[in-house]
Length: 498
Image (cartoon, rainbow, N blue to C red; front, side):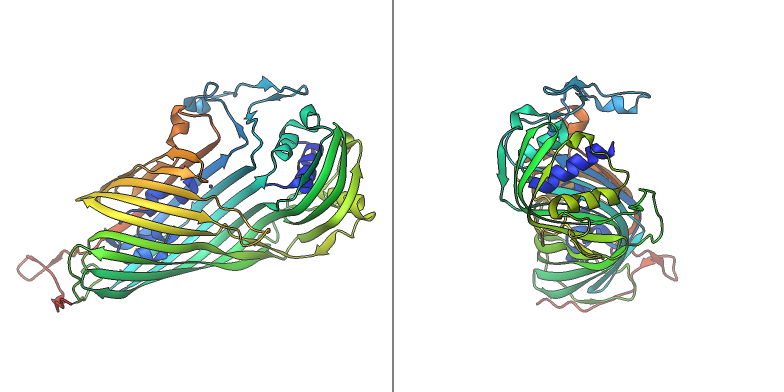
């Protein structure tokens, strides 16, 4: 993309405002064989897993969703993407001369988008008596935007020559933000059985994560008042905005730089608790081996958790800027050409303040994780059949925060040691209904929370696919040989019916 196009998108976004779950990987985090993957939704769920040892080899998730543009279901077929040289059909835009693949929705509601890529690296979980321990690694990339005024998205995608929006004084007063961050995380998890008496049990858990930032960007706008009179002019009556940038690029020549690889650091945590109504009275026992404690079946469980609470402070190749209630006039925008990012940033400062440096504030800034509050209810319906209900409420810590979409899901599932199937039915961001499917065959899980995309059941507005590969050992499955060649158990029982 030409620098002029990039600049117009960033400039328009700066003037007015800009903005989720497939990213939740429901097929891997809800079941009783989830083990280590419980940490993504509620770290207290580790204790009551059907496995005592869980070793993850590799997992990944690719997710994208938006409510601004779509690819018509009549014009794509999933299998075509695997054909050599296949190109999506294009159409002429209503105003201008360019051809486009995607159609914009002609609605005036606020626009949003969320893109997430996650690679879950090697990790392990081990349960011993009332304790569960875990170590996890991963690499994540998130790009989010929320509450974008519709006219901003139209200008950014269709260009300033979108005549229906010219010569209108837009005054956007609702705060908004757009943010991006790529980071690695190393986590240590712990869960403890804090209460167990009769048929009731409570567990609590926490995961503390060291965060290593690779790149970050955020833009926050509190107020913007502007007019686009024609296809090359922008009149800014007032702008109140802040933005920060830390990228693996040399801003003077746009060359890629690999050192320093880590440009910032921070900490994050997940914390949660789960209540179990057991099917049988809890029994206290003394064990000698990890494999001996049996799995305690439940009638239902209720969990609550806070996930992805934390931030990364970028200090390397980092700049923070502010435009505080300033006006500006931009003419001949279509012919502005920037040689590099540094020139673009200097020009923005000059246009608003009359010099190249007044917009500069500091050489470091924070980006907050996509935090969420989650409540989970899991009902054991019959034998291997379960029904799960999960609500996820995404919230922002500040304008310099990644924005996680909210979601409500109902997921029936069948689970056994060698096979598991889940069918999540969800309401994404409180408005978009979706159906997913996840299948586990022993140690391999593949799934999607947006199945309709593969079968052209609806217009294409996003994509979701995940997989997980791991190894586990089930609870209560000790098979040692005694002196007579018979299987024997090596624990003593002190049955305490309380």
